Length: 235
Image (tube, rainbow, N blue to C red; front, top):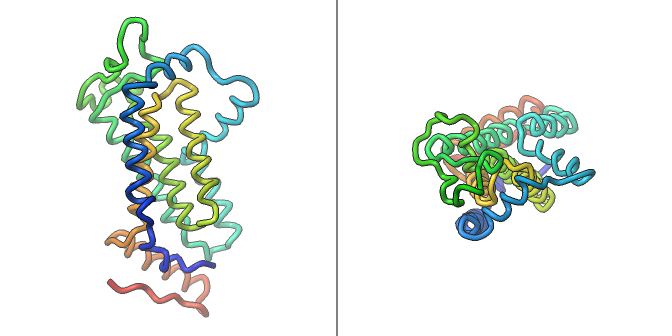
């Protein structure tokens, strides 16, 4: 099994800066260009047939239920030696929670609730600090499902580097599902993707929190396999 500690601070510049910046820039561009067009289309025409079933299934890569099942399989396959699953699940949950917190401060009407015939796309933003006053209908920005999926992808990539392309592909499928069922605008999912990715990375880099996780993971490894103890990194 790979030594996770040796990869603890090996986050690339692309992952830490380029990718989230690109996602945020694309989100801003989408607000001014394709948000309205795409949202109008999917408010009247949804995916059909097997494509719809496939994309809807991918949604669970961005839900706690689907993520729990994935991690349960990983854990069972590696017995109790797979000490990664706790950090991955907590970090992924934090990514989704962060997006839900942002929703409390920026209100935006979901595409399926928005009257495009009467209002321009910028009127989908309903103001600051709604604090859930309008319920789910005005909690479009950002996409918590997408944030959770990208946080999950970031942490899975840390644990299983060779699967990075597959994990990111699944996360983008979650984003597509959220747009195609008229729950979010393209800019919502791109912003959620950037936020979730960064939150996921914060559970990987060298900081106070990750050092605590390292101690727990090393202790768990020693409990499961006392003949092969790992030495904790010192800070």
